[in-house]
Image (cartoon, rainbow, N blue to C red; front, side, top):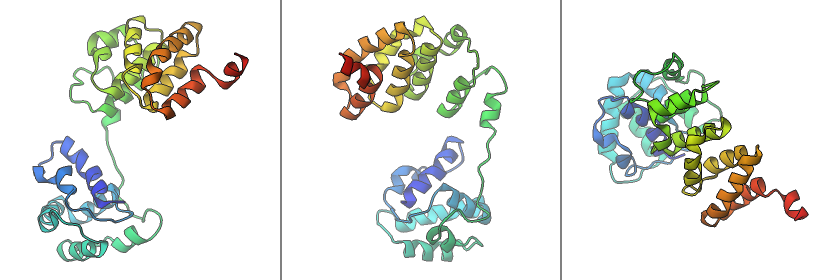
Length: 243
């Protein structure tokens, strides 16, 4: 795995949490110091950070980016540099060259979902996409009109949130959002969005008719792999054979 991916995974949450990281620690800079460490992930970096301390680890990151900016390095280069500049008790060879997750790996802890589950949100403007998804999926008997009235979900510009909301609209027969279902299915092509909604639509006669009507318009714009998947949902093989 590229070290850059592990760094993105590590630095992303810190950036979103408004930690005081310099802008040069962004993914743009990571692209200029690629390092092929096949097992380095964010948990590896978090384990090193825990062992070294946040202040020492941040100083190491700054020096790493400065030292290796705009050039590629090898695994040996990285190991030599980190052992010299940031010595810790972490067994780097075990992390990089041996199978499994080593004992003592840092474990992630977050109360984000606990706070989401605490009740109806007073001010969710700072929520991440994952918090929104968890909130919507945790609604056992969703008050669809209230959700729409307070959060304007049908007009969401976030495809992940909009997909979850429209899936719920189909499941709970929320008519005001159904016109948006057609618009959404005709404007996206990822199977992760298409398959759940078409599958849910096909569970009722009214939904089946809507699915077939939408798919007739949307199918030409889908990737052949998506077409094959949705063909199997909207026009199952048994039905095609009968026709």
